Amino acid sequence: MDTAYPNPVRSIFEPALHDDSVIVNIGPSHPATHGTVQIIAELDGERVLRTDVHCGYLHRGFEKECEDHTWHNLIPYVDRLNYVSALVNDFAYCDGVERLMGIEITPRCRYLRTLLSEYSRLVDHLTCIAAGLMEMGAMTAFLYLVMIRDYMYEHLAALTGARVTYTYGRIGGLARDLPDGWLVRLEEILVQYEEFVGRVHALVDRNRIFIDRLRGVGTISTADALSFGCTGPILRSTGVPRDLRKDTPYLAYAELDFDVPVGIQGDNYDRYFVRMREMDESVYMMRQLVQMLPAGPINVDDRRCTFPEKHLVYSEIESLINHFKLVMDGPAVPPGEVYCAHEAPNGELGFYLVSTGGGVPYKVHVRSPSFVHMGAASRMLDGGQLADIVPTFGSINMIGGECDR
Amino acid sequence: MAATDLDMLRERIVPAAGPATVSHGMLAFQLAPAELVPTVRRLRDEFAFDIFLDVTAVDWPADALRFEVVHHFYSTRHRARVRLKTRVAESDAVVGSLVGLYGSAAFMERECHDMYGIGFRGNFDLRPILLYEGFVGHPLRKDYPKRREQPLVPYRN
Image 1 (cartoon, one colour):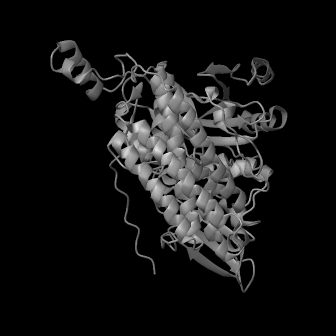
Image 2 (cartoon, rainbow over the protein chains, first blue to last red; image 1 turned 180 degrees about the vertical axis):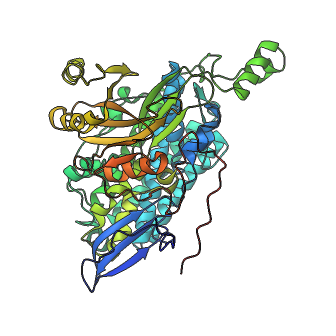
Image 3 (cartoon, rainbow over the protein chains, first blue to last red; image 1 turned 30 degrees about the horizontal axis):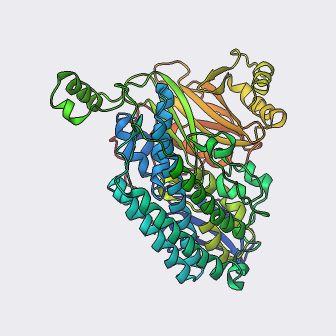
């Protein structure tokens, strides 16, 4: 290796394609790359000849750290992967551990997790679309969507106690049940959501500036999307109705009625529209779930993972020891390995967990959709205009916490 | 995946190490390093496993074949996943690269190379991706202490 570090990341554009092409760095800290990512672009005038995408600026050793904590202690940590829809990470991780332990969660917990997963999807898509629109100058649409998103954040804070990183999932259940009146407020927010999303549709969908910036820009073909491992809205925007909620149903999705919206040609406009339509489907699902939500306990009655009630910890020795062992040693997860995938807002979020028995994981690996999509980003950016990098990158919705781990 | 498809896959792909096992609803094959790329090609072409999901490794320092390279694939037609496990020794920690078969391999193999130092024969772009030029060691190996400090990268001009 060279001793004089010319660049912390080596560019592969060492012989340039043309004598007069220009190589520019976009990022790692740039207002348009919401997230810390570096795009090295070789330009011919305004045209992008090729790009080299570098991530890792937010790498914090997530997987290494996981091998040093109990299964239970990781819950706040997985929240910080995709911090826009932290609940989906929680539930996917807990589902993986529960599969290793052979635990079946209670019906109320199952429906609540489904409801909150869809709520998170709504928040995530609102954020992605709002930021994407703002970057193209649609400030009003941004404020409409982010206002609704903030109602949702506050509403989730009323349930979980935190605004963004909730730490709400538990192995075998949830942290606490719904507070009084929570579902009433949910319906109020959904009604407001419909009103304001309707306004955004009216402002944006047929807007000439918007269409010119998005139609036919950042296109990816179905074959490329599959080959590059794209999942979620990016794959669906190419016309493939591939959705884990339909294909391999988990939680309560098999009992719900919903459509999988797809795009036509896999460009930015399709990705915008797939996300907009998915949000409507999420609202439709949430209304069904509110009707279906059964009464009952939210935690399984399993001493290997569920904490005893506090008054029992203070009054009887068995519960005190149980509590102590769960905190100090962690939940007893039998040896084995599992790959557990949930349909996160950005695509397939997979947890590959390896246990050798005991309270601490042997290995935790995250298959994060953002990281894989960064590998496909060059396909969407190359050949376009320099200014197109901004909306295309926004429509991929890369989340640094999840991409770099 | 319908049970018949699963059985068919299980019967028709029999690596040298023995037939597939089913763990938590997923088929898992144990492969020799030389079998990896041909098996993946068959999975893709004959059994429609069109998405290469993920590659990572598991470090078992006590074993002679120290690293277990784990590949995951998904088939949008069968709606099923399959896991391939390849054991390699530390002295020869190299497996074949899948860059010729899947576009997503280039990025994901770089991450695995960063974290475990696994080589991928045929992937000529194994620059650091989550780490940086000048990082010493492979942090997800079990013998890499969590608190190790890295040498300071000098200022660039």
